[in-house]
Length: 150
Length: 445
Image: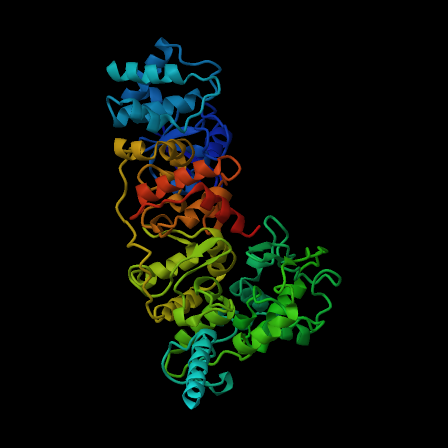
């Protein structure tokens, strides 16, 4: 049994330590807001925060998480940066099909928490690993800037 | 006339001495001082066989340990194939060779081999039909194995399920396709002698030497070869390129070798293939750890390190002192502008696992910081990892980096490789697309 700190709450999961966090979240805990995309850290759909840093949960073995705080799309709205990002996302109607968007929001929220006023290069660096096949990139960039100004 | 005659004699004599010097290579433990004795005359603990904890195990179990220590599986298994059923392709400049099936299948494997056949192959490089084996099969190392240990390995191999798998035919060009020539090669380069302990060294050192030289055959990759393609122990463990990957300098040189690693770090690296701040073993060394070293007992790992610590340092000025500082959390404008394409690919495909700083946010095995691979200005191993990916069956489970060789062009791979060495290494690389193309083809498949 491994105890994970997710969105401020302890959760016990009974899976082997080499299980990626994404599987523990979705299959063991039923928290399906975090999406499975590629499984090889190439798309960003599974992004969560580990002590505030954006990480790909499909590549993160739960055995290496320890007591570090995990934040998922279900809990990011209770952080300052997360709330601003979610509001900007709604204001600008960023989402199209939506599949990648929990990952996009998690990466954007981590960026905003680290850099209050990110420039275009910062946004490129932080968001390049999050792919959107609907092509919402332009609105994503605008929403990050709007959230930073809020 | 007489003067010319003597000049010719002198020239011939000098040429003979030079030729002899080029051809001659010292034995694998010749660097150690003191005299050697035959195993039977050695008074201290026996350096051969299995560790004490397995001494009373049955023959097959002992054979399993020794087979792992000799890492037979790494070469005798095709990529994704059945272990020991052979078929791994070695891409050499003069053609392609395939490792044979060594499961006990009677038609396509070694099921009909007698004990004498097996010893002949292991010690002399001679197949049961009398033909010569190529030294890609490291019989000049395995010749140091005792009969008992070799036959324990045979017993283990014969306990496996026979697999019917015909070994593909080698496609070597003349004269390399002439197996009989190996008889002359063996005259010079196969001692056909069992391991002889050094009486001046400790029992632990001798155990380490037996593990490194007879079983583990470290030098087959880590020691450069001479003109005759024999392991050149004049530059023992000074580093070489094998199967397209750079096997690094593992002498005790503090800058370019592993002399700055303490005993504990070295043990940990061998047993895990990763130490924080020293990077991760990948490619053939990753396989050596996963298939062989990590299955060895802590006492054997310790003995190996005791031995490695005595290997004389040989500096390699092409390798810088590894950079141990983390890079910044975000890329600086300067770096991005210098290699925009590399930065873009890194941001999209690499950063999620490796991180901008070189310390992975998800997996310790994906750390760059301090590793020799990113601190090698030839960038050969970074390129191989990008092209073919890395799969480690680590003590912490399976760790995989996908191969990008089919996803990105050679130009793109060169750009991202140069970005990685510039950002995380002590010296940036300038690998070209053409080099990436060539290097990728050299890897075993």
